Amino acid sequence: MKRVLVFSRTTGFRHDSIPAGVRTIRQLRDDVEATEDPDAFTRNNLARFAAVVFLNTNGRVLTDAARSALEAYVRGGGGFLGVHSAAATEYGWPFYGELVGAWFDKHPEVQPATVTVVDPDHPATAHLPVSWPRVDEWYDFRSYPDARILLRIDESTYDGGGMGADHPLAWCHERLGGRVFYTALGHTIEAYAEQAFRDHLAHALRWVTGGAV
Image (cartoon, rainbow, N blue to C red; front, side, top):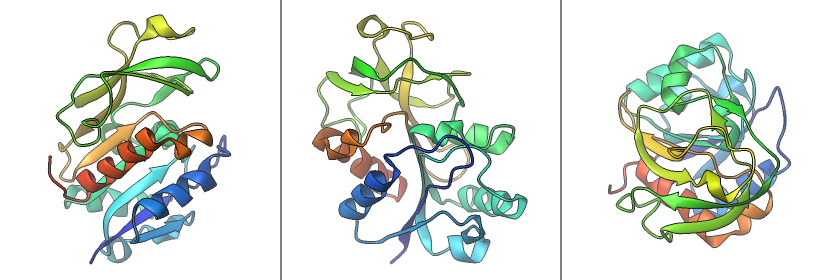
């Protein structure tokens, strides 16, 4: 049975929630390997995995060879889940921009806000209330993703939003070969103890590894 690879290397800002995130994914699935070694990204090694998770990665985290291996993996049908600052990773690599959907631009301070479920038909959002109040670090993005939008944030419920009424927070697509899911949630340590967020991650992982739509 193929496993899940969790990658959390950083060369820029490092989230203190990374250990909690790794523990959570291990609790959600019993087939997880975690690494911060870019040399794990070879075609032969990635063939062992049903999905790769970029968990709060940040900055340039892959070698040129690792980039090629990841691109081949996704184009060959491999799953990808990006969590929070996965969108602040590998700036300047066009394929990664297409993969994650949009790069991080800026954020205000961590604060409460209300997340709106746009698409309740996806398994990663089906369990959520239509209006979901929570605390996180709310990202603005440099562009709007070409993807199926699942969650938005209501900018009227917090200070510092810069994308307007249609401000996406989570999305998915299958444009590049494999199933790809990105969620901007997951900045704080506390987030990984929230059952609703844990279920969001669990169902996203199930979907990118080939579970039902």
